[in-house]
Image 1 (cartoon, protein in one colour):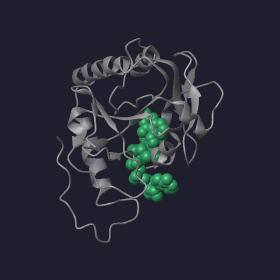
Image 2: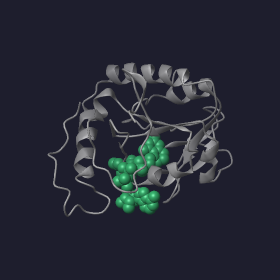
Image 3: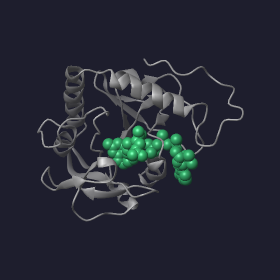
Length: 211
Ligand SMILES: Nc1nc2c(c(=O)[nH]1)N(C=O)[C@@H](CNc1ccc(C(=O)N[C@@H](CCC(=O)O)C(=O)O)cc1)CN2
Ligand SMILES: Nc1ncnc2c1ncn2[C@@H]1O[C@H](COP(=O)(O)OP(=O)(O)OP(=O)(O)O)[C@@H](O)[C@H]1O
């Protein structure tokens, strides 16, 4: 488990940075940079298998992993994270990243029907669907730098998913996807943070967050 920064009193914490989210991000990103290719690819493989086992479901919203995110690998590869999602669900949604605000969505139709969108993230070239499309998802795979045992997740700090997850159905399975090392005891939590109910790691597969 990655050690967090020393706890603070919580007094005078700047808005959007409850008790040092910035330090947490730097720590996790530094630890991910030390990973060798073999570990990265073994973990991506384990995650893809776990994603496939989440099915069968109707609609699954996932993300196309960036190089420093768990599950990264060529999206064209049949054992990639996104390809695994297509084996778990009849319909796969990928986010389309706007300049700000909640994420839009688009249906993934295969590795030939994608382009690089904002931040170099792979997104489908088909019609862009509004943020409310997330209400059709049975399962939502959410990228995270870390997640704690209560389901509080730490993202990259742009607030996209905090503004997005409110569109999910209350009964949808919200799953933070992280490395086993990125599951920590307690992260700082802001009032607008939306907790996930599940944590998916390469080592443990999907684990329900304790109530
Ligand atoms: N794979 C993936 N897709 C995703 C997300 C994500 O975290 N991972 N998002 C989750 O919200 C949304 C996009 N948000 C993002 C926010 C910041 C950065 C990023 O790379 N930030 C850089 C600084 C970038 C810059 O300004 O150029 C950084 O963190 O170092 C990437 C995606 C939607 N799609
Ligand atoms: N529902 C919301 N409405 C308006 N602003 C929000 C909302 N949620 C988050 N924000 C803003 O987004 C910024 C980033 O939030 P936070 O640090 O929690 O991001 P994150 O969860 O790490 O990132 P992400 O959600 O993109 O993965 C905060 O400064 C906050 O002001």
